[in-house]
Image (cartoon, rainbow, N blue to C red; front, side, top):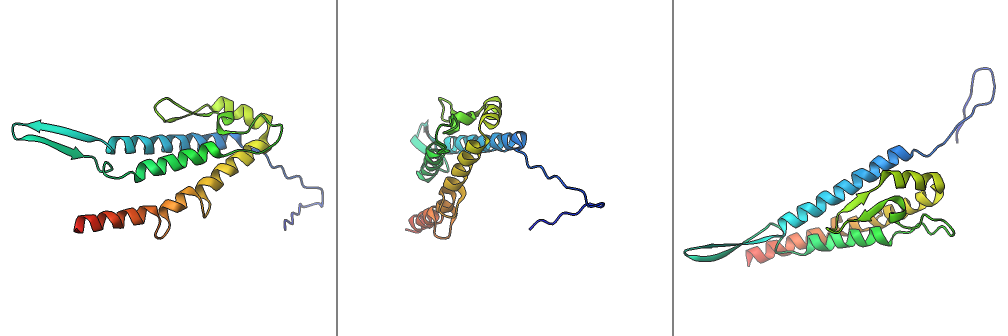
Length: 167
């Protein structure tokens, strides 16, 4: 319930507008965080072979012995690109329509201008598409929860690694 009163009893006008600039900043931040995650995974997945006069030794990066990071990134990527606005007749259907595309190296790229154009053209479809992404990633049964919940994939993987170390 919203009960607004103005001195003098005249009408009160409330405006609700889309804030494309603020939303674009959040999307750019998301794309940067995703790219940071991808870079971290790639840097820590490496296996370096070191040879000396005693022979060769493999030095494993902290994530080299697990596929969990790759699985998480694949799951997030799958959720991102499975999201759809579902608005019939709209030109805004998938993330590429919002200016979020994949580069050759797997990182994401965000085109702020394309996003602003999409919001101006069909703000309802943009809203539905972004909600679809949010639901796939951050809902109670979303990708993030599958990895971080109690007895989720991260916890089970950590427990498995601890057991392997003990053995």
